[in-house]
Amino acid sequence: MRFGRMFLAGDAGHIVPPTGAKGLNLAATDVKYLANGIIEFYQDQSEAGINSYSEKCLKRIWKGERFSWWFTQLMHRFPDDGAIVAKFQEAELDYLIHSEAGSRTIAENYVGLPLDFGH
Ligand SMILES: Cc1cc2nc3c(=O)[nH]c(=O)nc-3n(C[C@H](O)[C@H](O)[C@H](O)COP(=O)(O)OP(=O)(O)OC[C@H]3O[C@@H](n4cnc5c(N)ncnc54)[C@H](O)[C@@H]3O)c2cc1C
Image (cartoon, rainbow, N blue to C red; front, side, top):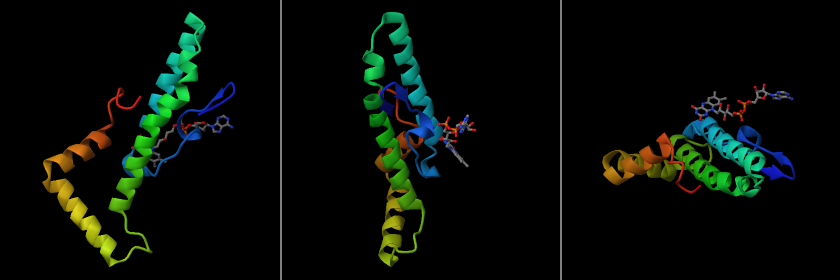
C-alpha cells in the first residue's frame, strides 16, 4: 500500500472478486486511514499515521479478500470441481441457512466488519 512517498488506496492497491461486494467498502476504509494519517502529518508533524497506514489497511483487506474468495468458492461451480464439491457447497449452504452461528458469521462479514475489528 506504500512505496516511499507514494500511497495506494482502493483498487490500485488490491482487488477482490465481486462476490463479496467489498471493493468500494475497502477503498473507503483505506481513504479514511490515509486521510487521518495525512492530517496527522501536517497538523501534528507526526508520521505515526502514515507509517502504520499499510499495516492497518492490510489487516482489514485480507479479511475482505478471504471472505470474497470463500464466498466465490461457495456460490460458483467451477469446471474442474467434481460432484463432491457440489455436495460440500450444498451442505455448507444448508448449514449457513439453518445455523444461527452460521448466519451470524455471514451477516457480520457481508454487512462489513466493524472498523475496530482488526484495524
Ligand atoms: C460491476 C461492479 C459492481 C461492483 N459492486 C460493488 C459493490 O456492490 N460493493 C462494493 O463495495 N464494491 C463494488 N464494486 C467494486 C468497486 O466499484 C471498486 O472497488 C471501487 O470503485 C474502487 O474505487 P477506486 O476509487 O479505487 O477505483 P475506481 O472507482 O476505478 O476509480 C479510479 C478512477 O481513476 C480514473 N483513472 C484511471 N486512470 C487514470 C489516469 N491515468 N488519469 C486520471 N484518472 C484515471 C478512472 O477513470 C476512475 O474514475 C463493483 C465493481 C464493479 C465493476
